[in-house]
Length: 236
Figure 1 (cartoon, rainbow, N blue to C red):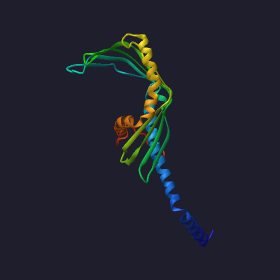
Figure 2: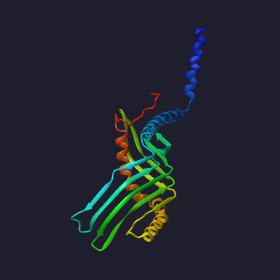
Figure 3: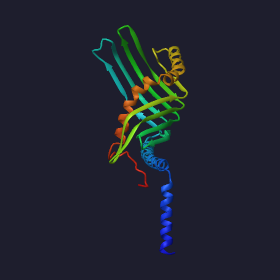
Figure 4: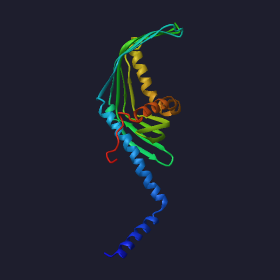
């Protein structure tokens, strides 16, 4: 093949490249870089979840209310256990390089929370709250939408303006020992089962304002530069 032929082929390639619309090239670069950010987040989440056992046990909690005119007494929470955390999956992770916007959808298929408690509390010296028993809270599906800004920094990621929206599926409460009264426990369990899901799903703003700053702090801690949690894609 002569030099002239190679020259014409080179010019043809350059011409075809120049004919590719700029917005198409921008879209390709956005997808490529966005996938890179998504792979970091997904890989890091998977690493954390692999190290979580099927049942997560939390240490006991003891609270004593002292020198408080509103509330007095004490509360103990023991045998706190959460089942189902390893089943969490990020179904959607998208990132836009032009405005640094991050969007994630995280699915929590089935969560079962169980704990024992003992309580002997007085509110305003008028309302007694006491009892002891084993309680369970079950949620069939929780959808977590996370939106905000993410930026790649040297050795990590930083997040800002994070907003978290929760959507609960079917929820079941099984409470025991309230005021040492089984009928009252069953009634409160039924009320919570019928209303908590709707409250969370219909009053998002209050809950979002409460949990979003906490989630942002946790995300920045997990993905901070040189964090032991971060997993980078193998293709870099």
